[in-house]
Length: 170
Image 1 (cartoon, one colour):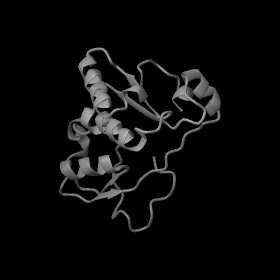
Image 2: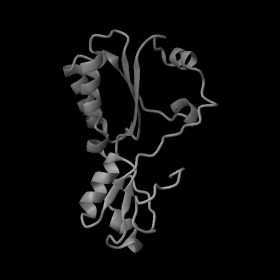
Image 3: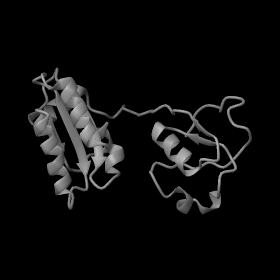
Image 4: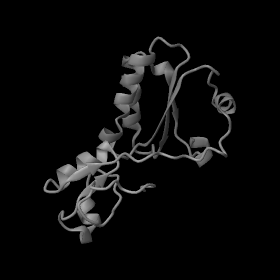
């Protein structure tokens, strides 16, 4: 996960490494990890907060990792915009999440409100929710659309609940 050497003095000693992206369950998943004896390096604000809560007795160091995406097979932007019906000069926000995932952590309500504040008066702006696992979560979808309606951006929200290839997502 780290593509460069850890800077000198950042960690006190060698330790074990684990990767975690959830807001619960680490001790149960990594029973061999035990209680904190080592420094924990977190790769996001979310992970740092979780580890500080879970392992308050150890030092948590946050090192944001660089996000690298190979876009060599990705169609050009104009082709993608035509395919999904977006104007060539429209500002498009793409938001990918699962309906059953950590709803509060993903915060699609906040995304709608922030989008509304920034783009309510832009006639071409779109907020695209690429979702998965909608079945059984229709009430959440209705709640999200009600917020968009209240914020005056319902006509700018696009819901796409279908499978997409990696290159399409990128």
